[in-house]
Image (tube, rainbow, N blue to C red; front, side, top):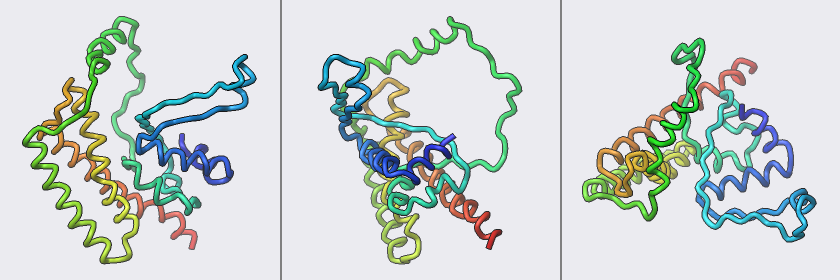
Length: 217
């Protein structure tokens, strides 16, 4: 439940600092922090956590209006465009009692995806994916220019501007599950479609999230 988290970000100075930190973590920047409580728990007074290169992913659930970061105008646009949105107005599959996995079944799942731990190196495009990537970026820039000229679709402009990065992040995850560092054309195409559907969901959220305010007015 992200409602409490976003309330913390909105209502406290510390929360705004943390929220801005998430913006840099989205870009895989380094993480350096040193909390006073860590010093108290250690004999080393110079305790500091340092991660040279991060890869931060977050999955958060929130109500429609909270998911729009309302009341956080200073950071709203920056945070909002860095999330892929999945919007639901009803229940999905009905699972009355989730299946309980035993230790052996869990170990089999871990083993099945164990190859991901061996992946090391830089992701690259296949020839087909490279051509598709160029085509997608040209289409994205055309849509971005059209939305910018309108002047009233600031949220859409932000999402379009972030789409290429979203596509890359999703394509890397999809390709990694196949155990390869070469992004295939089909994988990139699936990632592009996935991100576009998320953008459509975000547009629908803009309409849904305003219902309560409109009704109140």
